[in-house]
Each structure stands twice: as structure tokens, then as C-alpha cells.
Length: 394
Ligand code: FEO
Image (cartoon, rainbow, N blue to C red; front, side, top):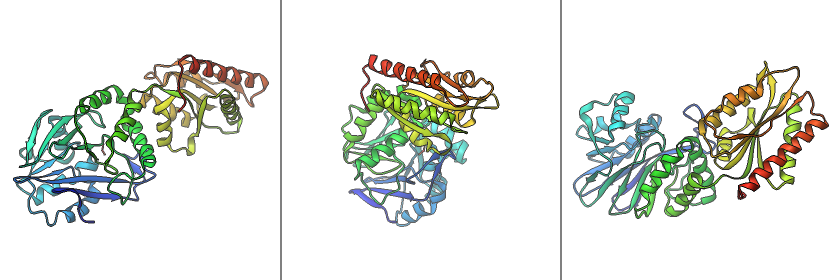
């Protein structure tokens, strides 16, 4: 694949990874991904913004075959899916310098063993003139790792945003065409890596607000030629109130917990509370993460295994605790046969969640009519709490 022109002297380079299905050995990629690099040719200097995943280095190097010189390799983020090909680029262009933040420099030295004399560190707000094209670097920490920054091309009003605003979608499109599809993929990406750092992301959004942005060119997914769409979505995900939504991750071994889950889901629907259930052993955890962006309430469903929660339910609790969603209420439902401490163990696993715990419902064996009454009471309590806060539907 050849470089693709965005505007005069600014090209997309990179690789579309159609078949990748897992990122960081953790995050599902149902639609593959792309690693975007960008070539900017000034009158005096040429810069390459980011590179590609090491497995795709050969694609980037083929695209660079006719590029005679690169003066600067700009590393916005040290993670290897963007930095992994920097050593190969530096080998081809021995005079090239790596432009990056102080924090990223240390990481690139550690992760890729790039020699110290190849770096030029830029401060927050510093600019780099290429001749008729000026890049301004803006520190935007925690749009994945703490060292992340973005670059704004002043003359052309293009924001190179790294993981910020990215989406894992493999596509032949250079620009976003289907906003609905990109909305979900970008929300999944936000949920997986930025949700825990909402207060810092809010500061980053505020920092970018004064900039006149015509295009947002992220390091994954397609380029936004209508940036308002994704900026408004981020505002909602970061700053918006949680929605009138219950997320119900559950696992069931002999159907008792499943019966309780079904009963609660119907009871919530009868009370006009939005609900989404995930059967944990087979659920796409990315979809669960998307739901956690908006959920006002989490209800975990688990049977008792070896005197505690099912490991799949423990994993969901661990995930929710790590992602620190805006969730305000939490409860647990499930079954046991002779005892156990599922509720206590799960409750101890979520110290990061500042939630009010609503009365859990545990049934001995198959839920009986009393247990189902207690589920009705839980649905009443959730509906009342959501109403009290005047939560809007999703
Ligand atoms: Fe796309 Fe955090 O790397």
C-alpha cells in the first residue's frame, strides 16, 4: 500500500491490521485495527509522526522507499504499536533525531534500546519548524500511558492525536465514513484505556478546546474530517452523568443464578430502567467496558464456587475496579448450596468504586418465591435511586 495524500505535503503512512484479534494480550479487537503514521514534508525538514507495530515494519519501510530523507521521527507515545519501527527508521536515516517528551525518551530507551544521542526532547507547548509547516507539541498525559502527547500542525489545523480519539477499526477508508460504527469503536477504545483517567482526560480536552481543529488524525482508525462528532462524544463520556442503565455481568453453572438474572432484567424493564446483561464466560469484555462508561448501576451475578464467587465474576469485579466507571450503585445476586462468602469477597475487590451497595440477593439453590420478591425489591430500589438522580436514558 502506497502513502495516501491527506493534503499537499502531508501523507498517511502505516499499516491496516485486518486480522489482529487481541491487543496487549487482553483487549479484544473484533474489527482489527490500524497503525497510523504521518509524513510531513516542510520546505526545509521532513518529519515522520509515529511508526507502526513491529510486525508491520516491512510495510512502513516499503512506503518509505522513495522518501529520501527524514530529519525527525516524532514519537507521541512510546507503546510499541507506534514506536516499534523507530529503530528500523533510524537505521535507514542515520541523521534522523527522535523528537519526544522527557518521559517518553526514558521509555523508548528502556523498551527499544534507542541510543541517548538520537533524542531531542520537546517540552509542553514547544514548537518545531519544518519550513512552512510548524508542529506544536501539547502534553496530554494518560490518553493511554503517562507520557502521551499530541502534535498540532498550525498551518493546516491538523491534530495528530496518537491514541486520543483513536478507534480499533481495520478499514480501507482514510476518513471516517460511518460515524455510528466509529462511535462504538472509539467508545470501546476510550473505555478500555482512558476511562480510569477521566479527570486527566477532562483536563486534556480543556487544553485542546482553544485550538481550531480541521482534521483529527489519530494513531488508530480513520481520520476525522468532522472533528466535532468525536469531540462531543468524548465530552459526554468524560463529563456526562451516568445514564439510567444497569449493567449485569453474570455467570451461572446450574441455572439458579441465570433464573435470578432473567427475573431482575424483566423487573428492571418493567420499571423503565435500561439494562444490559453479559454472560461472562463468553462475553466480549470490550462491550462490557463500553456499557460501564454509562452504567449508573452494576449488578454482579454469581454462583458460589469453593466458598467464594465464580472466578469469572471475580474477573468482572477486578475489571470494573480497574476501569473506575462513574457507577453509583452496586449489588450482587446469585446462589449457593451450603454457604460461602461471595458477597464479602466481591465487595473487597472493588475499593476504587465509590458506590452505594444495594441489598444483595442470594438464593439457596433454585430461587424460591421469597427470593424473587427480594429481586423485585432490588429492582424497586434501583429504579428509585435512578429516578432520584433524574438519570437520563441511554
Ligand atoms: Fe496504540 Fe497505547 O498504543
